[in-house]
Length: 125
Image (cartoon, rainbow, N blue to C red; front, side):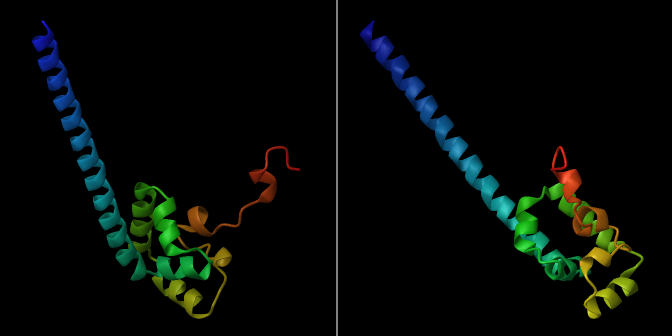
């Protein structure tokens, strides 16, 4: 009986080791893919007016890409790519207009709209 329990224990140990190895491999692969995806997003962002506007507003583009969900970033990049106000945006960026005045930007509400302190704090104190 002790031989059978030793074999079963070794099999469970081997299965557990296999599970741990696969989990570490999957997590590592996910981290590498995430870094590559964020690097590609950074390259896209660098060539767009949105990247310049983020820098103008004092936001670090690397933090922007790291702190926000990929879906939200993709929506904002597509909004910028399909924007009909590129001339107005270019003029605003060239004249050092503050980003709080970029009301023509399709990403204005999500990125540049000034936050109301009374609404941010419950109770308004």
